[in-house]
Every structure is written in C-alpha cells, then in structure tokens.
Image (cartoon, rainbow, N blue to C red; front, side):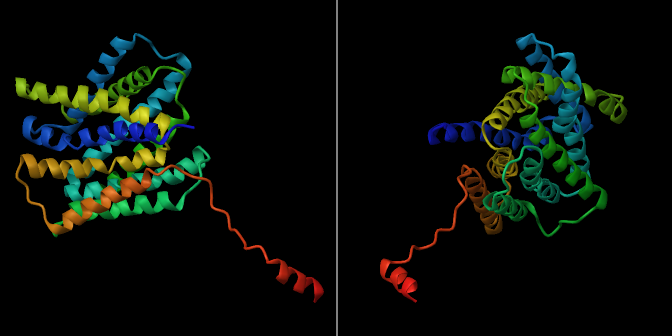
Length: 306
C-alpha cells in the first residue's frame, strides 16, 4: 500500500496539468491570431507527439494501432473539436459548466469498465464541482444553444471515455512512450479537420510561435505526461475531478494578468471547486459495516429465561 505522502505527491503532480491548461485561454486570446481553433489544436498535439517520438524512439506494435487511434481521438481530436464548437456557440461560462459534468461521467464509466465501486463521496464531489464552476463562471448573459450544449456534453463524454480507457488499456511501456503515441495519433487525426476548416494558414510571428511552443511543449507534452501518470496511479474519478482546476486557474490568471473583476459569487464558486477537489481526492476506504450492540449478560439471561 502506498503511503499518504506518496498519494499526495501524485495528486499534486497531476494537478499541475489542469492548472497549466487554465493558461490556454490567455495564451490563445492574447498571443495567437484569431484563426481556426482546429489549426491551433493540430499545432498543439502533433509537434508535441512527434518530439516525444524522437525522444523515445519506439514505434507502437501493430496490434496497438487501433487502440491508439481510439485514444488519440477520444483524448485529443474529438474532445478538442467538440470543445471548440461548444466554445464558439456558447458563452465561456456555459461551455465550461457543461464540460464540468465529465467527472460525474467518469464515476459511472469506471464502475462499468473497470469494476470500481461507485462511492457517494465521489458522486457528491462531482456534483459540487459542477455547482462551483457554474458559480465561478456563469453570468447574467448566459444563454443556451442546443448545438453548443450537445457539443459540450459530447466533448465531456469523449474525454471521460478516454480517461477510463487510458487506465484500462495502458500498455507495458514507459509513460512517456505511451503519451507520445497518443499525442501523435491525435495530431494525425486532426490534420484533415484542420485542413478542411482552414485551408489557408496565416503567417506566424515570433510571439505566435512562442505561444504555440508553450501550448504544445508545456500545455501538451508535459501536461499529458503528468495527466497519464496520474491515471496510472490514482482512481480515474479522482483524476478527472482535478480537471475543474482548469477554469479556476483561468479565472485567477484573468484577474491577475488582465485585470478582470471578481465578485463574491465567484469567490464562493472558487471555494466550492477547491472543496470538491479536496473531498474527491480522499482514497477509497473499506465500506462501512453496520455494527450492532451486543446484549448485556443480564439482558441475555432475562431473554433466555423468558
């Protein structure tokens, strides 16, 4: 059994990934041209995957190609594509709130695919996370769009299935190798989507290239190594719940770097998000058993006599 300190270290390292993902909004809006998000997704995944492939110098076996394409699609291509559709058709707060249902989906998918127990604490933490993100991001201008909501739910489902299958299908190879294979597969699948969405790519300045390097090398390669490491060591439901730290980080960075205002309702949402994450990281313990008081000797004797 791993020590509590080891689990705390695993959680802290895994939490770095969604915290860095929270910087994507500022980096994309402030340092990249207003262009197709599918191109950005492609340039985020494929260079990171190819660079890691050069480092590990190991190709996947033929029998794994199908699984890697599925994982690359679920964790990257389909997820990012639907995420961007939701972001374009919904206000940011609505899109993030819809996406926050992912941890709840993972709880039930893990029970089906991995045989894990559905714990009340995990369900309540996931529900609290949705409420916290809603308070943190939803405003009076929030509006619903059917296509956008369906895209957001589809993206959450895609990532949730990817999280569970990443745990279930992990091959006996180093973690960096597994990450390289998935990023490369996801990037290759994004090529036709990006090409159809934006056949004419814009010129990029040094600032744009630096932003893409951050999104690809740090926000892609490093974060997914940490994320997949967490999935190999921690329950998928607990790892997935860490993902709601991403919108929290985005709000904090917007306040610090862009001077965006925060109100008490958002503060309450932030507290609920942190509380949900903290409760959701508690290790699963043995199920509680009902204990019945033993009758005293006198009572037992009286019962016998009667």
